[in-house]
Length: 294
Image 1: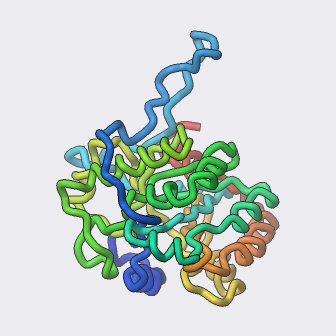
Image 2: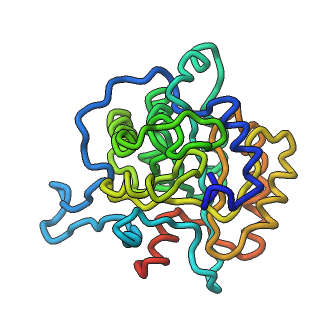
Image 3: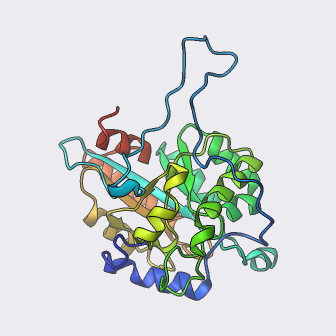
């Protein structure tokens, strides 16, 4: 999950653990449906809206050189103390048996805590997770406090040598992203955001080129929480509080089995950052600021 792959040494342990447990998408893979545009178009008004009211497309960054998928790490460091908490809902395509045996790749307590604390957040979800937990995916997607973004269908790596994760062939990368959006729609999430987080945070020019046709902005982070497989919630909270700056994107996890202390850490992080004058926003607001949109 590190941009470029090795930048954030603090996440190496997380990546290694993800590779060891193959944290990819929930359950057995199904055959992909015919490709559809990855990002919601948001170009037509609903039937009940006045003809003159046309919902705007969520903000994205302009393509990079040679049309490569743009990559967002954090918003400008301005006096506006905003911070985005993001949560990866990880599950790999081959973990269905583990879920059936009782392993929990979800974390409803964390989502309930965010609601109780009135914290907006962005959940980067794998398509397989949405298939395993469709009711939760739909509930998160329909709550205006949250937004759902794409974390691939399979949670297989988009580069080689990515913490031991299996690798998506280059000619299947775009289809993997689009298949996740198809899984979201099937679960009842109709307005998933045009944002994509590479599994493991691993990407290169080849991967950026492969997914460029989906119209997504790749979203990384600048603050590693260290919550994966952590047993000390206070240590996780300290790491976040020490790293946050105005415009930061914090990466955390929404997976009970792999990140059991996240909810407790959040209950410490949120009031302390508010005490420091920070305002919690979704990734879309930070990208809107970076792209000149409000």
